[in-house]
Amino acid sequence: MIVLAATLAGCGFVDSRSPLPLPASLRAKEAEPPPLEAPPDIKRLVGEKLDSVFVSTSRPANVRVSQPLHDPRGLGWTACVRAELTSVMGQSLGTQTYRIFINEGAIADRRRVEGDDTCATENYDPI
Image (cartoon, rainbow, N blue to C red; front, side, top):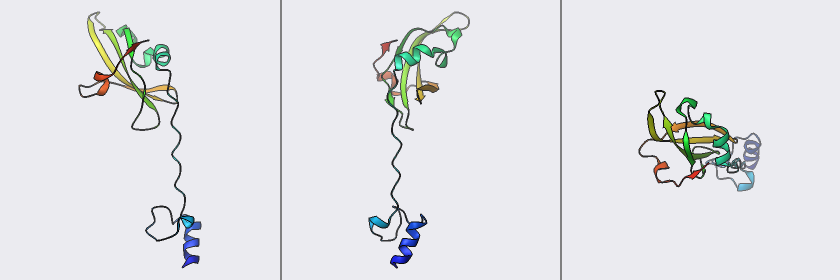
């Protein structure tokens, strides 16, 4: 039985979730999760990449950002961005809020905030 267990442990078949009653020393170790990214300088990032958040023709003004939070979907970060926007026709669109997703120090995605988003309760700082 020990020879079988050692053989199975050597080929990777027996791991930490195995139903076989093996001592911990014979089980494969679980992989460590990758480390989380360092928090981004959100003001600098949004200020330098404003076109990644807003369409340039919307002429964003009074741009404000929330503090970055760990993205619950992965290892990156998420933050909220608000600005006064203008339509293509020159009419005010009012304050618009977007949630941005940051991976490896770059804005990877952005989504307009819906009513149930936590961006409504965030504190914002001007960039």
